[in-house]
Amino acid sequence: MSNEHNGWYNKIFSAAYDPFMSVVEKNALSGRRRALLGNLSGRVLELGCGTGINFEFYAAAAEVLAIEPSDAMRTQALDKLSREKFAARIRVEPWLLEDERLVAAYPAGSFDAVVCTLVLCTVPDPAATLALLYRQLKPGGKLIALEHVRAKSGLGQSVQNLMNPFWRHLAEGCQLNRDTHATIEAAGFHAVKSDEFDYGLLFIAGVYRA
Image (cartoon, rainbow, N blue to C red; front, side, top):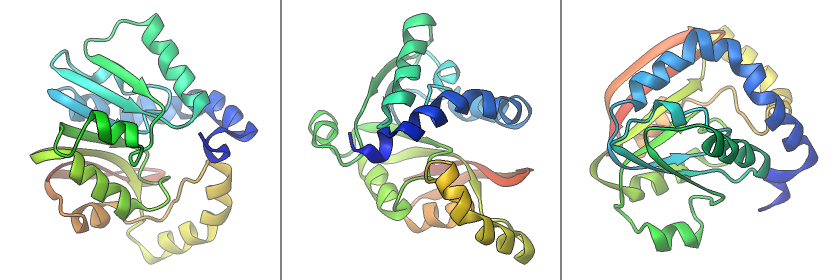
């Protein structure tokens, strides 16, 4: 793995992530994770599983491949797998989407669903990432997205644009001002359900079809 995902700051960020997010998870995200993930079945690809926060929400009908390039984040996810019993079958790997090991093990059209939760804000090229996810899905497969997105108001967007350079460095590449819903649809996905909610930032919780 590159130092981009495994520098000294990444270790600090990874250790602080779950405690830092605990309030927003309790008040705004956990229930939506459960609603989005609880009915998935078949092969599921989770992009950037982080510390494994989604694992408890998958049902027994899901067989999950969770990929995470950060050693520190992935260590926490593997530790959860070793300590806790989850309904789904879950495999954690250090792969990136373009990794030849992923492509060899899971050719195009291998997955019934792909899951992106608080990760499309961090990938360097969201359009390219979504194109690869689209390729991995079976025809009619689902994309599940739980993401913070660009503000609606001009003032909100200006504030996000002003804060973004600082925030991007503080939060391991997270971008505040991405119009993720539009980028998903531009990649060829069609919204089955897409809800917006506000918790300090504007979020989307959506189900899309390939």
